[in-house]
Length: 358
Image (cartoon, rainbow, N blue to C red; front, side, top):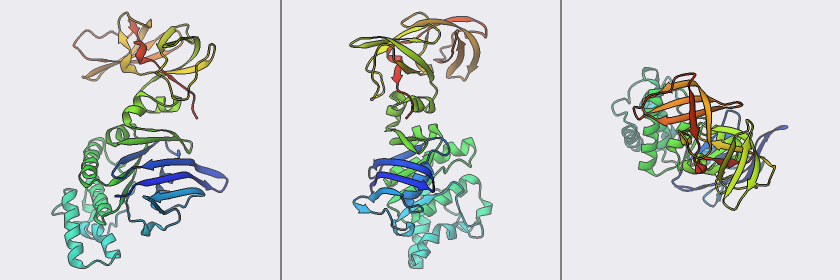
């Protein structure tokens, strides 16, 4: 399998820059995800890797081979599109076999490869069916089989689950990961769904406005966001502006807008963030780190909303200037009601200091 390297890649469409200075190395056999909101440049980047677009600036390599201006059909990539792009007048077998027939392989070889691909995606016995006779999940598996049957060096998936309902999306997500692990194929996945990205990926590239915001493992992205955009886009978080009051060797003391004084560990900060007295910075505090009762960084608020989900209980707690998202594990204890005053506290290691967006 191939590694993929983008060296300072930029793509402009006339006066508009789609992506800017993308510099990444995707390792051989890695499941790597481009994550970000609509219009952030993730599909444009994928299409340059596929060869559908050529960069305005920069280079693209598969291992050490420069493919920057190599046509798509010469790159040996498998691609699964958002709308599957299947041929409705063809059978399942004919759809899967299409790429092999273009390569003019012998009929016996095609039959063997297609049947093997059908087995991989659990579609044995479906070869003679028309695409219109299949469910959405089955069509998605046909698209996967068609991409895999040509034995590509790299598998590209562009929002492949967006047209499926929640249950099918979960089942297909598990299937995609199973196939990727089983085949060991370098896989690049595009999505705006953070849950998909977190559950599938070895590493994630978070994008916004055509630029890389952070690259890291799901744990790094979630626990150590590089800036305010990443902290707010990945998972739930309480993001608020604060003023630095004191900077110690180990701790930083800040004041948030409603006069609450909080203290956190200096090391829990974005890599490029610097501290100085009086400076405005941002805090990222995940709902699950806030704990009921007295403790460090205590405050009181009024319950505005409760949501019981079985495993956890989610609260919205109002203070003078903020609404705090709080999540506690369900232990069977009594649940506060709307309007109740409750005391909460934030452990020092639950406060993460972040810089502004890039």
